[in-house]
Image (cartoon, rainbow, N blue to C red; front, side, top):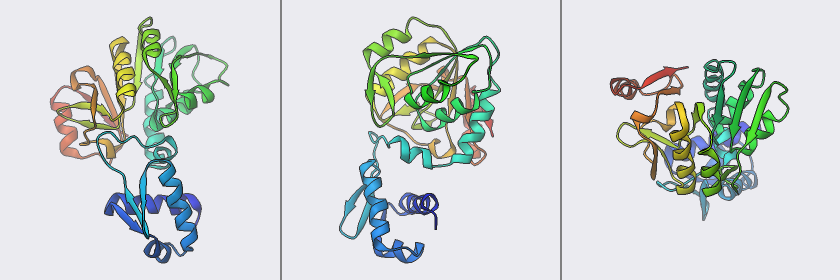
Length: 253
C-alpha cells in the first residue's frame, strides 16, 4: 500500500474511532508495526495525535489547529473542485485575497492562468505558487510567521490589510455552524481573518463538508457577513437548507 493511501486510512480510522492500535493497524493495512509507528510519530509531530502505549489518540478540541500537511491530505479532490469553481467567480481587473488554508491553497493553483488581477495573501504556500504567474500582480502581506497555518499574522498584518479594499475574499475556516458562523481555533489567526472580512466587498467562504456543523473557539465571520459558501456535494442537505434560509448563497460542487 502506498504511503499516502495508508496514512489516509489511518486518519479515517482516527476520525471514526478517536484512537488506533498499532498491532491492529499493522494487520489491517498489511505493513509492519514499525511503519505504523513512523506514521503515528509523524502525525504526533503535526499535532494530530497523542502517542500512547501501543497506539495513538486523536487530538480534539475547540482550540486545536492541525498542521498544513495534515489538512492537505484530506479530501484533495473535493478541495480541487471547490477551487476551480471559485476561480470562475473572478473577473478581470478584480482584487482578491486568498486566505491561509489547505482549500484556499488549491485556489492559488486554480487562478494561475488568470490575467490582470491583483492577488493579496498572507499565506506562504499561496505566494510561492503565484510567484511564477506572469499576468497576476501579487502582494504579500507582512506579519509574524506561524508554522502550523504557514502564514503571516498579527497586528502588523491587520494594519496593512486595513489600507486596501478587497473585491473578493476567499476565506478559510475550521468550522461552520448556523449559530456561530465561520470559526477558527486560533485567536491570532481569527483576528486576522476578521480584519479581512471588514475590508472585503464579497466574502466567499470555502469549506469542505467535514467542516459543516463544527464549532471552533472563535467566530471569524457571522452568517450575515458571509455572502457565499462553496462546499462539496457531500454536505448535509438539512444544514445547507438552513444556511440558504438565513440568506446565504450556497454552491455544492
